[in-house]
Figure (cartoon, rainbow, N blue to C red):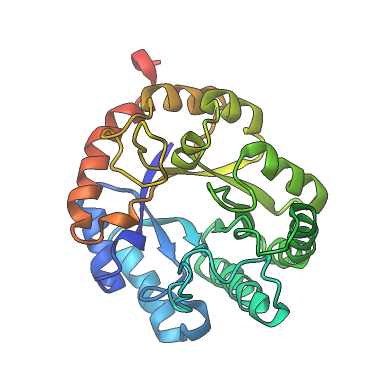
Length: 284
């Protein structure tokens, strides 16, 4: 397993500086934010793409993931991360999310990253039934999954509290209906804790689907607010033991976007807490 850090905590810094900071703290990988100010796909020219790759190489970093969940560039007044969503009733506004995701998939392939993560459908709109929203979400995902498959990358869904898909079982319902080899799960440990999921059990059950992990801590209240690992209530030794049992050897990306005022301190604290857990238990 390898530790990475998401650039969504570093919105006040240009990408080349972000890469240097993350590498200096000891991380092997970096999750690229497909959004302003780092890599908004709709406005990313060839020069900035080459500069991103150059900064990664210069700092000895590898892409853990491309984060296409957030859409700060659109800046919807309701919530700039969730909206527009895949289940927007307005087809024209819905297409903004769809087109962004398609561009992010293409960017992922161009940069040589393994996959993108995306939202699990936004909150239900007034008068929208869950069944209608699921049907719409599935139909929207199918051509995106095909696009990802054609480019050799994965499209990972990330369940989140308050959105259409909150739990692992809800993810499975959609994944089975889409039935595409390019669809996978981004298992966010903090989100799972918020919805009171049995995390070790879920990890074991979903191991064939999990292609990437997000890590953050959550308070004992289970309120969805990302905290530095080791400062909340999640039992990370138990989580790491569960991941290790599945044989997973991919990326664990720390996601601490609320810490924009001092992202270095948050990233450093997370690294110092999580690094000892990366070693196999008892040297095994």
